[in-house]
Image 1 (cartoon, helix red, strand yellow):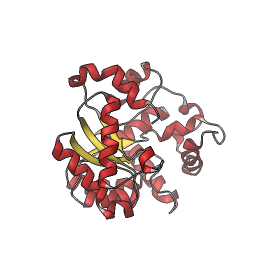
Image 2 (cartoon, helix red, strand yellow):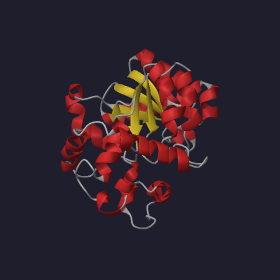
Image 3 (cartoon, rainbow, N blue to C red):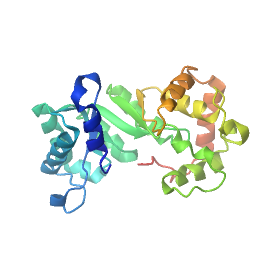
Image 4 (tube, rainbow, N blue to C red):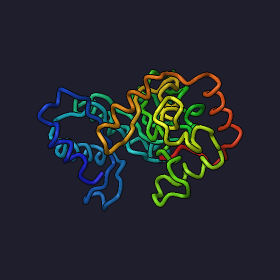
Length: 253
């Protein structure tokens, strides 16, 4: 994302052994005509650019970035990942995306990890993809785990990235995502319920919770310490989704 890899490389490349480093391939390049390139060569070029920007010789996980099912079926993107792994420039490989494309990627048996949308407003993966991922013992990274905190807005947000989840919340009408509960920073507040719902799903291992405030990291840890939701709360969230979700409510890439 723009200069993110460069910034990360400057900040931490000198202490590479202190952390696990993940990135995605398929970003635009001049030689690709400013479009994603899912050929084997394109994936490997993308990785080389990332390694240069990050100031390292290998990443711990390399993910295909949301290419379509048809592109996956062509096979070259997966071949690129496998070549990267064989060369040692990626310890593990995976796919980032949703719905039928994610299911296809899992069923190939050629990946180690999956990054997929899972949250109170985005539950397609819980039935469609995660059971298959568990069968294959894949590492699962949940993206958008708190649904972009769309409950913060009283009306349709200007940020288009948040709008679809806001619309879904209007139909789902979860009690913890309305009224005063939206702002509560305790086990019954919206942030805690949403985060714990995602974190405790069978097969989910890691949450991507973005923040611009370092203090939020400890707050999120504290909220997660409340552990599993009460069974009735979990059941209500799932039943409400199944009763209200429209066919178009697929995973949000």
